[in-house]
Image (cartoon, rainbow, N blue to C red; front, side, top):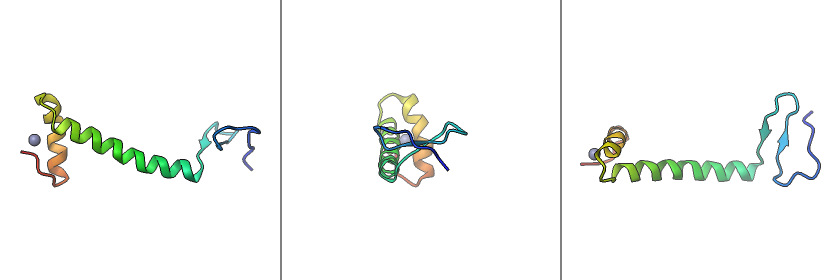
Length: 70
Ligand SMILES: [Zn+2]
């Protein structure tokens, strides 16, 4: 049984044995939407950057994903 912290603000539970927190379903859904958006934003920003070092870092990944680059 996982003890709940009374008065917790963010609806999370803490497993006292491991110290790990579990997220609610809503928090998991938000994270599952935001994480790919953040990754795609970083990839596109680096891919279209004028700095060749940033572009070269994202270029191979973009090609591997089948996206056109240059
Ligand atoms: Zn490229």
